[in-house]
Length: 151
Length: 151
DNA sequence: GTCGTTGCAAACATTTTGCACGCAT
DNA sequence: ATGCGTGCAAAATGTTTGCAACGAC
Image (cartoon, rainbow over all chains, first blue to last red; front, side, top):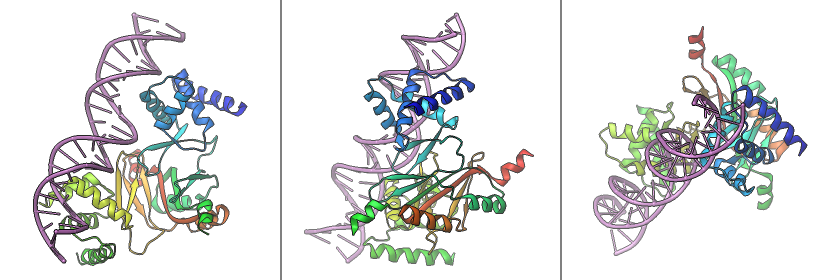
């Protein structure tokens, strides 16, 4: 995974700038996140995936690392009303893309990258004098697979 | 509040259809919700507001009622990453309006009613074969008041 | 030696559940 | 008398925190 190494190196620099070290624990967490970028992992899931690699780690460390990465805007903390926070890598350079499709039937979560909100953001900034920095958009509905199953 | 009485009556019928009774506890909760429609109350806040009306109630009842109302789609359960679920009355007839502006500075939450997503939903349904039933859209940013405070 | 980081266990906060009781039909 | 609804307390869940120990510089 050449791609992963590059991303990791870049993150390492971001940590350095912010006066954090890339410890083995943090690296292990980041590797899990990078290799499961589409999966919206929870803290507990990350914890278990790291341990599966025969790497011993404490759950508190996972939480602390995720909090730090969120603060540095390397991760997005997202919430799908399933009782726990989930974490999402911020795509390189993308500031305003990246929305979610949550299937209410199978619980699956898909990501879409299109920027659907350009117009909406213009309206909000203009009409509500609100300075937008970020957003969360999730559509609830039925995914293609589940629709097929019905017919 | 004539308006409130009408809304309450309507909800009572919805409950009946679904084989639930409008008990005094449930009515008290609904009144609090209707009279604080803009406030995104949490379960605990609702609990305390009901008790302030000299009405004795158990916290578990509040949770159970909120869960039921959410299931009946009378309420929306929303999550602003502050550690607890908040509840929002569904506006009469509105299916697809109603978004949020969360100020990252003062923590305030404003509601906006414009439908900003018509076009976006068309795109998603067409390009991703996803049948949309609902959505959650929250903008994170700085509200007008906080912007003023800076200058 | 200093200081950031870790792991553990305890604390914490929110939400859910088991159960006995109450009340309306 | 049946069954839904309630309140309480206990449990469960997800997350945070205090603290002693560790390790890099």
